[in-house]
Amino acid sequence: MSPPFIPPANQPLTITKRLEGLLQGLLRFPWKSTAITLRQRFRDDRLGLTASSLTFTSTMALVPLVTVALAIFTAFPIFSTAQNVLQKWLMESLIPDNIARQVLGYLTLFASQSSKLGGAGVALLLVTALALMLTIDHTLNSIWRVRTPRPFGQRLLVYWAGLTVGPLLLGVSLSITSYAISASKGVVGVLPGGVPLLLDVLQFFMLAGGAAALYHYVPNTRVKWAHAWAGGLFVSAAIELAKKALTLYLSKVPAYSVLYGAFATVPILLIWIYTAWVIVLLGAVIAAYLPSLLQGVRPRGRSHGLQFQLALEVMQKLEGARTSEARGLTIDQLTGLLQVDALQLEPVLETLCELDWVGLLQEELASDTARYVLLADPQRTALAPLLDALLLHRQGITQGLWDKGRWADLMLRDAL
Image (cartoon, rainbow, N blue to C red; front, side, top):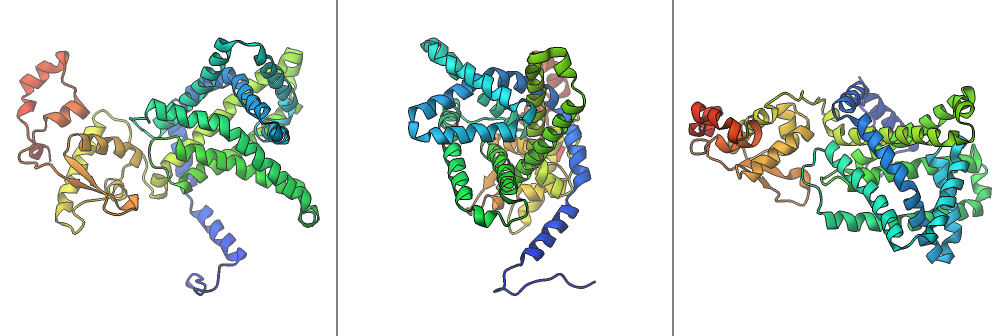
């Protein structure tokens, strides 16, 4: 077998070699394991029910979101062109062509009526819009198994900034891009497909970038950009396929138009919002579980006592690592040794750190080098706090088991 091609240090990789490397990476990607994980997480995390809840919240928040965006652009008349470009892009990229024009017309009409509302009505609209964002925050944190979200005030400030500044920046960037493409039609026109192809590619990556930013910034945990972009690219590709499929279905089977007539836009829009949320949640699952998928580690079943078992396994490995040069293990090393998903292991490590049985050392700037070390002495540490935290909480109905079983007399060494 010939050795792989390695270019000289001063010679950059050609486009052909880059494409070959990308193709090899796609061929090595664990597609089967990813599909199995998506199916398991969709069922176990009840993502279908979560998507239904988000669909309802999104429907209630559509008009408030459009109202806030229109109010921002109205306050800055210089950005009126950006407003038109943004509206057109959102309709073309997020909603199938069959209902895009009707939806935009209805939303603009409803949002224009908001000027007749009083202070209480405007406050209710803003609360509804922020409720959607807080629901998204809770959903993504649950997918990443985050137990402690950001403080409410911090989340409120971040989402309010995204709600107000986000549409403005997006509209301006789209306007600048549109102007740049118009000014270089002579250059772009010689490309296969011309301007429409370039706009489609730009739209694809902007949608992927938006989803990647959502996965990177919203969960209160560290999410690598590479993993977030993997989920974002899945969302963008799946949205395009879903739009084509829905458009084809509505053209071949006009059942909704026959049954609902002019009202057909509403059920079609609800179906589309639900489909889009399912795609976004599956993209979050990909971003969250990609590290384990690339390591070939599949999540363990949710058996009773799994967290207690993992805690014992972690402390066994950390006790063995005490004699090593590093004196501890990184989370990647632990997931590899225990063959467990990182999302299942992180809550256990957090509990052990709260008990002060395990400590986290981060002596360098890179968080990948942070090591967990065993602080507790197994000979002198009672097992009861771990039993109480991860196996059987000590309360009235279980007090008899604690007393008769003499669990309070057990030491950590007895379990290890």
